[in-house]
Length: 523
Image (cartoon, rainbow, N blue to C red; front, side):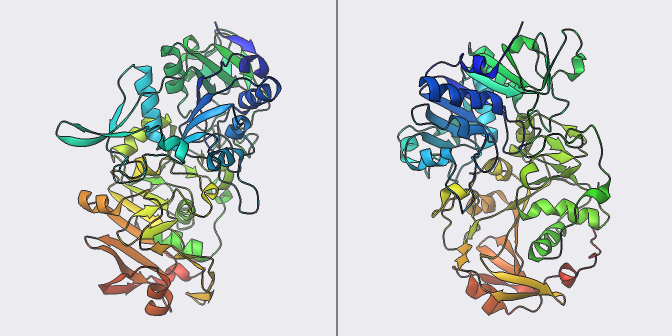
């Protein structure tokens, strides 16, 4: 039977050198009270030391004020394996974890989120590790960076290229955690966990299994404790036989910015008119053009950035429900949310465990993915995971590599360059001042998506900006559409840092994209 403890008592169970697996995301589900207590214990006692922390998606908010930064202490944290990391604002110091990474005080790896879940599942089953093609020809591949974020990590490779069944694969070792720190809404006295106020279950079950089967312990932070025998068995997502410790935290936030919203957990459906419609600006133009790539009946993955507004474009155009959105944290259907609530959806049809969602993504079972870019190069490769000058401004790849590995159709979106001053006027794009940083470059700083591999696999890839649309063709990038009123040479070709080819049948982007009225979108 699980024991109810304070967060401080639970933190006292973590030994020096332990491997921690933390179930959370950048926007939701973070067991903050336990992580905070661990950091406070280290400040007082100097223990636990030499920890390895595993975060498949992320832990805490975008700015490092919660989550992993609680344990980002020199001497406390020795290694960290993360799908993504907090990204600090430009006008502030980097989050503590990034300061440690940049100073080589911790060995850090950016491993695709789905693969981290796979490593935990392999550890739970005591299998020899993960064989996958996810990440080949990207920064994940040991022939490039092997997921290493700094020199401390490069000295201890986490992935190998191996030959198996006459083919090349990437091999990742299993993860067998000593401690799993997970979160739910309610625990009964036996430790059975339900998630009725959560926006996702993430990988709670997988982490609990991995720790239990490795002889470790499972600490569950919950909002409340119920009497034994009062849970409906179909509601229990992690059984009490896997849970050792319950930490009651009645004030735990639903997301890093939300005390509680019943629409996030599927207990209430919001009226569609309550979802904010984006104002007409270059970002909305991009989201509208992305929406033109979709077909009714599709299941579409959506990522952080400009494309996150596409569901609102469909609401405005009267097409809500014709596309089913699927996001890596586990929501299926509904309306994906923005900003600090990203990773959640209101009005979802279902919540599946993140490892199952990533299995769906890695095999390309869905119809299309809408993602952002930091850079695009002449081969059509995309960098979404690292800015060379300010790496702490980026969050890493998250599930991006899993999602794009076999996706049949991908639409990348973003501004053509960085820093431009633009507006929409009289149905056209007006550029008042050019941007200073090119985003279409000869070679991306880090390959998050391989254009070369996409061409070999026959993936359909489109790149949408406010100025033009580009397609990935056998010979690389081709400009296929240009915004009305722009000069192709001055406003597009000369603003790229690498030569761009122009399609023989160059078209003008639909002027309806640039008007304040509904565009009459047809799916």
